Length: 182
Image (cartoon, rainbow, N blue to C red; front, side):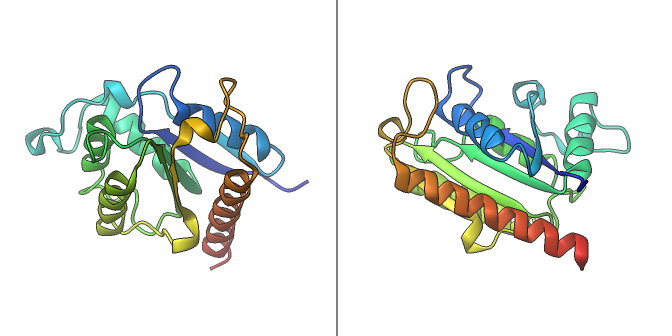
């Protein structure tokens, strides 16, 4: 029996009824035979980034986040766009990884699902590239008008979008396999 690859899924929204969290849960179900997807739940508890606290023993929530990133073979980020940018809690969490380099050469898939999303997607992609994420173009997806693509139960009603999500996840799986074989 083949071991499932561990993926840490990070939702950029802290809302309980977030469309992005629904998408992550749907992906978790769709890929349950192939991937062990763990949803990170501590985003709102990570303190504001402060370089003075980024020392040998940073806050426990930061250490926990970094540890989960290190243990994962790949990372899935699914986020909305807030005010034409990256949600503050998500950007804050990423800032905590700059010096510790958990994203460096780590396979990442980025899905931005929002009303529009272009500016937030572009901004977050820039950050992920600066922190050296392994995020090929095939592992990036912008889902504009997300509320028209999923229903209230979080299931995809737009089959073209579902196909795109499957391709992005396939790309993430390929990147993780290449890394483990390389």
